[in-house]
Length: 434
View (tube, rainbow, N blue to C red):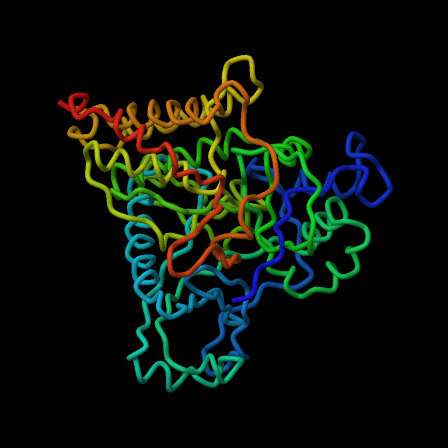
């Protein structure tokens, strides 16, 4: 396996394009602020390519590689709104695990989320086994390389539409080192642009390596530069987290939250329709809720089932800290990020109160989860100093980065620090649950 390019969180203003400093208005910043806003009703920035209607497999061109992860490579099917997640042997079982938890979380969140929630999940269509002779016979010619035509397991799922070309151009203009802008604009890989939302880190570094828009990392510094609503993203993450924990019964390990374009169609749940006034024009209503960029939840291959007790709580707390820094960190009241953590905490506990069963609520597991996260933050020294600063830890993650060693899991993910965590587990006193 080859190592992936360094993922970028930002470039300091003095390293930027040599035009306007970051504390003054610029066209690129305006485009990004408007296009990535979480407010509904924002007119989407149009792409240079019109949307394509679905094509039958026989009419499709070669599948295109649009990302590479720890256990799989991602291929788009041109002319359709679907992708194939192709397992890297011997990680077929991780792909199956992805399918199981993706399907459970997809349906559970749709069942329990109160409208509106600023979060989308790609639809998991089906699982295609390497032994599906008929499918592989029909689709083998569409794989771009002979080495890819050997049957393996596939997860077929909905495509998360990449951000449109004006947004990609603005990201390059605003954050790419000047010496790399021409290369970044010419690189077709940068057409597959999703933005990771990192609410648990600030930048204080100059990135090195090749600039890439695949899984561009927007931390708190960038979100504030662009005046984006951090709290709505924090609350959406927390709501999803509560449902994944206490309804889907999963630790939510290594899930990812990214900004991508909206789906071609938005749909209303039965609960959302019931909350509308009678005879509401659905098309007009959906148009008013459409945004240029949506927060998407993805990547479930490392999720694990939890029990609704102290052991399950410990797994959920460990997964929170083992992941990349998507989630806000507990901070003191005098820190400007305190409100972000409070928003996360409030949304997590509110959703748990709505959808968790009486057993979970009777044991107080949701509140204990928040307490244990704060306790671990205090042990790490992050309470009192705010979110950590510095470069991404790891060479990329999820759908893009090949990370760590395939035999023993991933290292360097989001400041993963296993040493000392046992102390937190010891403090999960079983007496607390009686």
